[in-house]
Image (cartoon, rainbow, N blue to C red; front, side, top):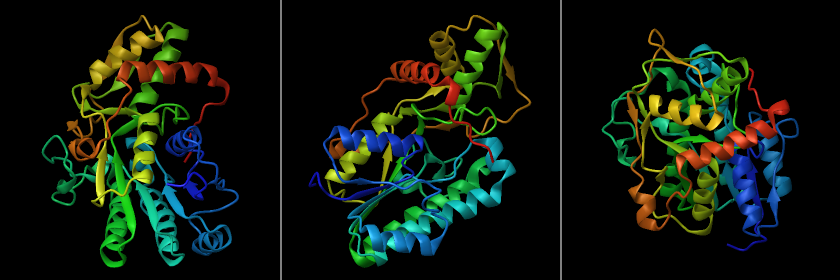
Length: 315
C-alpha cells in the first residue's frame, strides 16, 4: 500500500478510529482524511455521496457507529438499529458507487448468537438468536457485514469485515450509564478509591469475557489495509478470556482501590461467555501484542491525565 494513498477514516474521533489514525501515522501514511460529525453527518445519504465525489478517497475504514452498553441498547433500541444502519449503508453503498476498491468495515463480536459454541468462529454468524440486551446494534452490524460480503461476491471488490472482541483503551467512553464493562469499572473503582467507599458491580461476576487493547485492534486494521484478506469476515481478539470477577480484581489492583466489592445479583449478566476464535487471523500472520494488565495500566494512566475531559456519551 502506497503511503500516499488517500484513506478516509470514518469515526476518527472515537476510540477505534483515533487508534487507527495513530497507527497509520506511525507507519508513515501521509494522506489521511477525516471529517467530524458536525462537518459530515454520516446519517445523511446525500451528504456522504457529495463527500465521496469531492474528496475521492481510495480506501475507506468504517469505524463510525453509535455505541453503548446494555443500558443504552435497552433504552434506545430504535436509534441503535436505525442510526447504525444509516451510517454504514451510506458509507458502503456510497463507496461502491464511487468506485472505491477497498473498504474495511469494523463491527463487534455481538453479531454472534447468544448461545453459540465457544470460542466463536466466523461461520457461526446467523446460526441462532442474538443476545437480547444488544440485538439492535448487532442486527445493524450484521447487515453491514452482509453488505460487504455481497459486494465482494457480486463486484469482486476488496470489502472486508473485522469483528473485534470487547475493546478498551485511550479515548474510551467512561460514562457510567452508557459505557461498556471495563471503562465503567475503571471509573467506578477510581471514584470509590477517592471516596473510600465499596464498589457495587452488576450481576454475579461469573460471565467470561475477552478484552483487546484498542491499539492492537488498530494494528489488525493496518494488516487488513496492507494485505488482501482472502475471506469476507475475520475475528480480532486475544483468544483469551477471564471472568468479570477476575477483571474486577485486576482493575482494583491497577487503580489502588482498597475497599469491598459488592455484586448486585439482581442485575443481568448478559452472555455467559464470549471468546473469539482468532485462528483465521493468526493463520494469516496477525496476533495481538498487549496483555490485559498492561493495557489496563496504560488506559488508567490516560484516564488520569485526561480526567477533566474524558468522554461521556449522552443519549
